[in-house]
Length: 137
Ligand code: DQA
Image 1: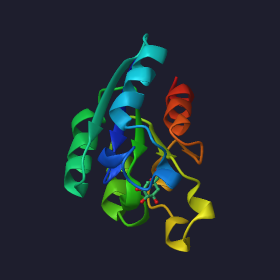
Image 2: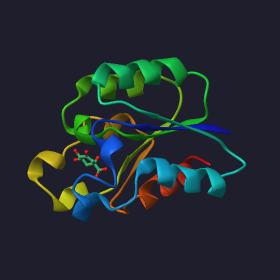
Image 3: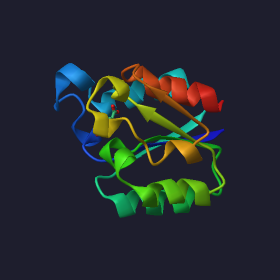
Image 4: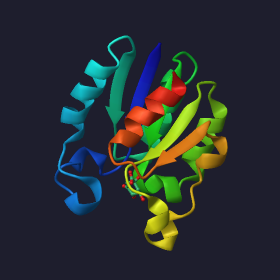
């Protein structure tokens, strides 16, 4: 199985940004442990801070891989275009968030993506990504 982990804006700063919310570990380090855990899966990783690059990636791989685990960061709450891109491709997308967005500011309570995703996993810290992969498998 081929699965892509797709991270949006500011998630390149995991382990550095707002540690009380997002933890101490960098995503690169965490991704090594994910690869070890799912050694039978072809796991790849892409991160971008720009909305268009995330959409391009969805178009590029969204017709031939088996699943996408997407944390679109703040674009979750603003991007009709990423929501449309998820609807446009064939590959199932699981939306994930590190934090429990429902315990946070009200502008984080709405997602433009969820409706077009297979499911949503949030609030389990970095473990949300592992659960996202498990759900696709
Ligand atoms: C996030 C939650 C978003 O509201 C926020 O903008 C992020 C990260 C999370 O993983 O908890 O950048 O998607």
